[in-house]
Length: 604
Image (tube, rainbow, N blue to C red; front, side, top):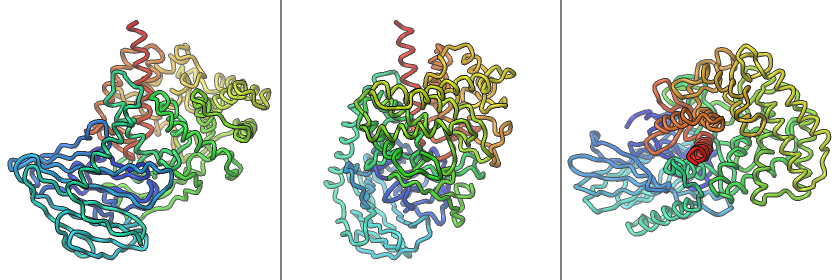
């Protein structure tokens, strides 16, 4: 067992309320319950010795391994091949489609042999509350209960188990055609212990889960050139969405580094207004109206929350809308390959990032086309936010990348404030709603003129990160998408050329240059996968289809073996940062659709 497998060497399974990572070695080394942002049950990915894991794999250390998803599902298959036999471990979590949150979450791990004979061994070592809570063990012949003050877990197996201190292990030898299973359930302390699984019960659960995902995916409208990757991205976005509220998390994990051994390690298990808002368009384009509508309702509820330190909207929330995300350090954890500190919570939640108002209004306006319309009271909330923004847009903020180097007049923040007023005026007109349209129009027009004058660098012949500077920033590639500039405007084409000179490395795109624009953090970072897909989208909109398609195809080669992306790509092509990242997958969907449409027009 590798102490710290590569970040990319994992697949994701989930039940629409939480998720688990399973390595290509058959190890569950990350699992939280009952929600994405809950304390961990298994967290060996952040500390091999203290974090806990659930291993189910053949005894033969020399067998080769392959991992894939069962087609068009979130059922993960890990295959182990040796001269003596070929075996498979299938991992899945039955989807919970109720709108009510539950403490009960079940991870199925089925083993089967398809050729020869294979001996599997299992180790189940939960470490509740990020390894801070001790537990007791109650062992039965084919089951075990792990009880702590933080949580309770039950393990039921179709083969005998034995005690190893406060953990359990077991072995089972299977011949071709035989099936065994181990099922781990987190639940309330008083809930009954599950019965040992049978081949029939496990098979029934497997096909029910597979059918759920395949039925859901059949509702997708996408019929373009990259169906496999778009479908996998859609499933990943669905897996990362908390069904009871419709709120997507940015990623399933916390603490995975942007630079191995560095300090750029953040907790991404929360809902960013920005990420969720931009996902609405991607979901609608694929035909997933229910998911897009659920998030717009969640977003509308946040607009009605009490002001937080004088601001109308916070940049991120917990999946249930709770705004308090106090950041603390988990000093007892080693961190992934020594990447320290490991953070719980996110202090960036208290930052001022004015761009989120543009993204929020962008989402609400996109929802209009499928009948998502705020009632009178909902509109009054939107109107109050824009009235607040009319007084607040012209001030420095921390910007989209959550830098900790001080506030600046970020150009992207101004652009998105422009988008907020532009979409607000459009909504007021479309639905004949009361609004201070004269004031909003003045603010919108003033912002545009300001960005044109102060956001432009004559030296770089490009729009730049912040006023008075010359640093390029990949976030500005959203300017044409929101309509601030035409995609073939000469100044925008010049900006694309400057981005290519300064931020693009072998078709991969950096967010910005931290050396040229200090962000208050030590170390460097990889290229941002999100930004690469944004660049593809911008190139396609600008009519530069040949480089756009080539970059897109090259970027797809950086996906892991099951089609998932983390946040960044490192110098040697390795995936870095929290995994998998929703923003990367939604931008892949958007880039694919933009490219498809542009290529179709060219063919016609």
